[in-house]
Length: 173
Image 1 (tube, rainbow, N blue to C red):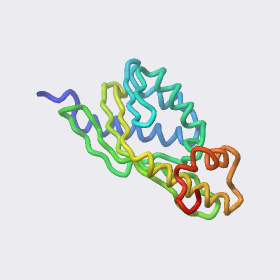
Image 2 (spheres, helix red, strand yellow):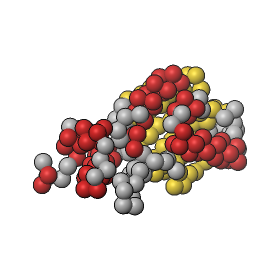
Image 3 (cartoon, helix red, strand yellow):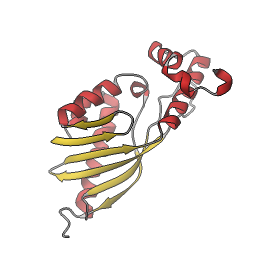
């Protein structure tokens, strides 16, 4: 099998993907992020299902990232990545830190991401693999700290009092 893309091409495409993601984390322009996918791309998100096509990805990401807890995540840096020219894939670990609750403390969880490159700066598939319980527990802990500091906003408070209850330590239920 002759690789379609070299490791250097995959690394460069992934560097651009990460640069765009970092810019979007600041601008909240998730349209720009969705535009990195082919029109027929698949996005597999184990808790939310499979989105088929760029427009479905766009709708999903905007809904997710404008609602808590996505709206309170500060950045999405890759901690490491591996490029596989034979499959055209980049496999990486993404960090998902929450914004500072007000005392400099850090609350984060990671996920594994598999990206399939289509060429011309576009990705044809993304799959995110993570432990939803770990993310929920981390988010609940962030909410507790923000509440202690008086910085818990209404969307986070609503999440904590509803969905968040399933992630609370047994002693808090």
